[in-house]
Length: 451
Image 1: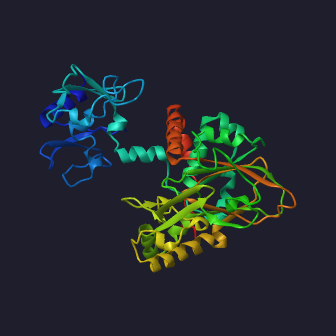
Image 2 (image 1 turned 30 degrees about the vertical axis):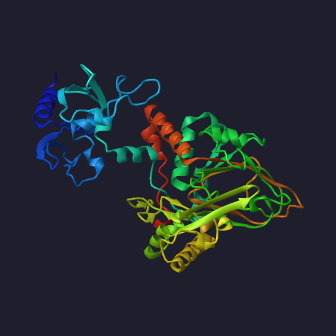
């Protein structure tokens, strides 16, 4: 047993806690600290910063990670604790005895190996092998690491200058996992990317989506055509101007990703319009931001044998604020779709509706400001992939009698997209060049930083 392991074992037996080590290969110093949860904890400190904080009954649950043996034991993913085929857990956290403690501790190849005393009944001579990187990180920090940088908000000019970084070759997207990682990272950062040299066949949009995950089925079908037709059941299927909006907000769980593949676009007009709703929200006064995060707007679709109805806050926020790369507060998601808005009285009355309408008007004004609207005419063989919970999209009117405009589209759920994003992140990191690749993909700051 190494000297470090011996010291760790001694600390663990005396304090009834397992030390959280930071995965930085720095020499730690340990000090016992009396916490407020009826047992002692160990705080590991480094020259530059303290890895963990003392846990109290009033602290957030994430700070419990790595302090008490129960939570370290709960992280074991060996074949006894987690089924190697299904990946499902074989025990409940509440099965772990309250008096569990470490019997022995070893550091082996960047992992902590722990043999337990008073383990789960029925499990004998059990050892847990847990990566030091996992123990030294909070769940939130691990999630942030996998899910990339903060959103970069943009206006038209800023996005146009960044277009070379946001355009990807179709064949590379299909065949190169590193390019797929860049695409998913670009969507998380900017909310929008483009594919070029896409085969001009109807089935390709499903192949593009399938590279990420399962296509979201809706009453429009698995895929759908955006072209002008008579007696259209959706304003998108006309040649008229289509204002900025998001899709399917009349559902409880709107799709997270929309994919549009251009097959034909020879008509005069018909430019696609995109606006970053995060930027519009970031430009609002704090009072209006708060009203839009509390007041709900109802959306509905009642046509062709369907009747959908759901209400959402215009700006969705979490327990803690999200900020863009410029440090400006932005929402987690946006819900804005005037073409499908139900009568205002149908939404819950959480805030004064007159104030809500006033703040919504400010949001609409910011979203539609010419400098905030990116206008782009998709060419055949191009595809746009964007975050339907962030990016507002629309279209200029076009002359359907002269030429043809035909886009093929489909949706993906947010969970499906984030799953693939995490998987490709892990694969790139495990290839050894991931961290460098990720640093090269740092696109910079939001447009708000320069305006």
